[in-house]
Image (cartoon, rainbow, N blue to C red; front, side, top):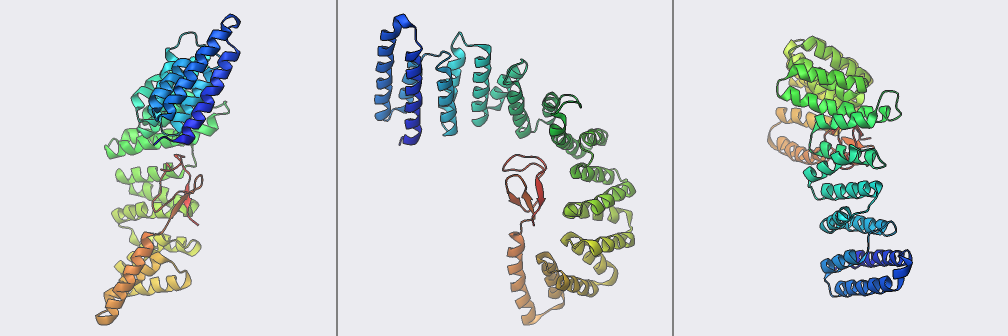
Length: 390
């Protein structure tokens, strides 16, 4: 079936292009050119009505001469086809433009940019990259657009090093107006490289990337977490603990990410009493489920599960939470038997479903919800937009 909405717009766009081409054609050929355009226009329309859209588009393209008046019609048609998912046809139109002689440099760059966008849309990143690299090497109105499109490719392909090179060109010097706009994103690219280095055990490079990230965004919570993680990886537990404690005090919104790392560091340093005191201080000013769970485990280890159950019960009564109630059920199940235990198991199954549906984070840019923290939103592709869901 033909998408009639798409092809109606196509006919209108092509018809407008024919009108412009006839209107601005050479005066001495006006009559013959107009006849030629009419014949091809109606030939293409006939093919379209007979559900032969490929042949119709080829006829329209061949009939519509590329010049300064009709170029925008070609480009508009290509964009329309790409928007409707007809990427292969959009590619043919933009390739046809680039094959035509006599285009100005600006028009060539515009066609290159649109063709590269077609390739990105169709997943042909290598071909898009080659076009964009050529485009951004020249000055012109599409250089910045080309750099931004190239950055998207490197982001999606996880080519963080190449991406930093593009970001350098977009940011310019520290005195430029664009520097502050791109600096936080440069920090995220450095963090990605640091995380890769940590996984490879290359701690020296990991630390260098963290320092570089800090130069771009000193207040980044991600950089702070990564530095704490690196200290733990290198068995610098006291430094890791100090780093993460500072983060916890200043960024209680991200305690869900900080507490697991802090628990790991304290477990290795065998300073559980100090950790328990720290969590108690945090809990007095900020009620967070991660703190509640960590404290309950420490109390269970030091004073037994009954004491931990009593503590969690008091906290849940004072500050109700799904995670807290689920933990309390765990303790009650441990001390229950018979029918009581059976009922509690049923209640726990209900709570499992409730917790599974919990939304912990939301993107401030597009509203995308997730249970885990993403530094790059999977929906809108914006960096650093996730906040605790309120």
